[in-house]
Image (cartoon, rainbow, N blue to C red; front, top):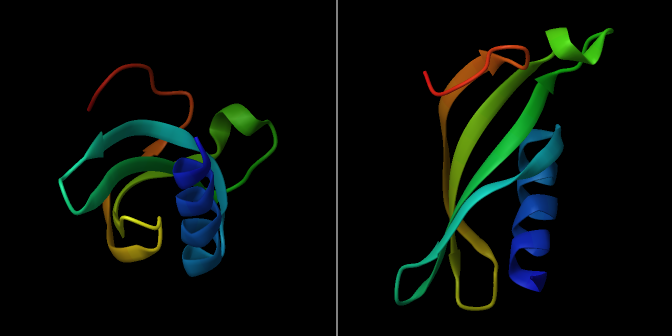
Length: 81
């Protein structure tokens, strides 16, 4: 979906970090709400990298109108925290 790709690219630019993927996407009537996983601290091996989960809201054109970090976690931690 083009809107999710655009949101990932914008969030990467805003955080100056690489986006790993979208883990949630839903319409909120006026636009979209995304959950994007961002690699905040890349490490070798990559299983020790620190990721962050961000919520981003966009308008109907896919432009980010708000975002916030919800949590940080090591990539090697399985499951929800």
